[in-house]
Amino acid sequence: MHWVLHVDLDQFIAAVEVLRRPELAGLPVIVGGRGDPTERAVVSTASYEARAFGVGSGMPLRIAARKVPDAVILPVDAPAYLAASEEVMAELRAQPGAVVQVLGWDEAFVGVDTDDPEAFARGIQQSVLARTSLHCSVGIGDTLVRAKIATGFGKPRGVFRLTAENWDEVMGDRPVIELWGVGSKVSKRLLALGIRTVAELAAAPEDALTTEFGPRMGLWYQELGRGGASAEVDDTPWVPRGHSRETTYQTDLVDRAEIELAALALLDQVLTDVGEDGRPVVGLGLKVRYAPFTTKTFTRRVPSTTDREAVVAKAREMIARIDPERPVRLLGMRAEMAMPEDARDGHTPTRGGW
Image (cartoon, rainbow, N blue to C red; front, side, top):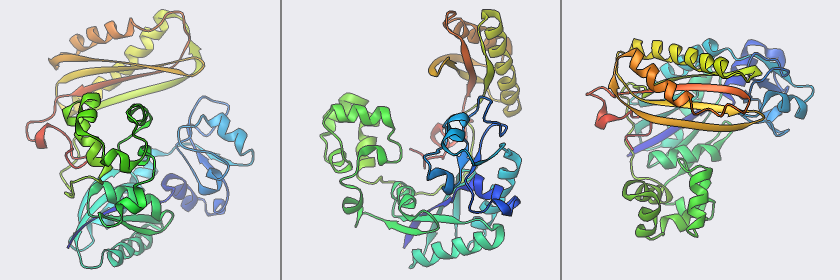
């Protein structure tokens, strides 16, 4: 029988750091920014010992340090995490009959035909541990959605199976925000329709969902409520939709000219990344975080072009929308690219072609 396994490395970045510094084992470890809580930066990850104090990814580093005064705070070392990730993914691909779809540094889907998915999952855990000294959890499902959600019930270092057989029992009464693909904004819109739980979403009238979210997304959210339909693990090489860069400034930017120069400098880096892919730009995004912590995002479509100056001209129009009366603590620029003609259905396989 065909199964989807979702492999998720436990506290990955923190675990890599502990491997390099064994004396940190059992201590609250926080990784973020340059490792200096007096600077503006956010937590990339935290060990389970730090999470017990309420520290989580995306939290400002200074607040994390306040929650755990004796925490070991380390700078982000992306090359080390990438190297460790590549070893893990190589080991997953070495499993007999496995099809591997990488989702990020620390997670991947594995498609396999087996009569004993639990045994296969345990084998993955043992082989990854033997090769990398890293622990992982494995979710087993009959769809991508169920496998992904199952992993959360298996953490840490465990295995959990979630299928059509036990979906309603396990997930039916849970809030919709626990579904993969449903965030806080969507869950609030669903609540406005009287839909609070996964079971209520699965049983919701199609016309109500399509009226609120459109014909495609409305039915897609209902499918999520039923556990998803796709079980295809796609090992097509990942194709990025775009490139982005962002910077948190240690001192707020207040001068209009300074803000524009900073945004254009980020765009210059982005367009260099885009140039390496050799695909035209079709969209732009600008992220602005005003002091103290209010974030605004601007997006716009761009006529498909490889003309750098044309893209910069469109970006200047977006940058002009930044409020000149508000200090800026973070800027981010993103460029969306046209997908290559051979990309499946015009999009990446990151979520199984949804």
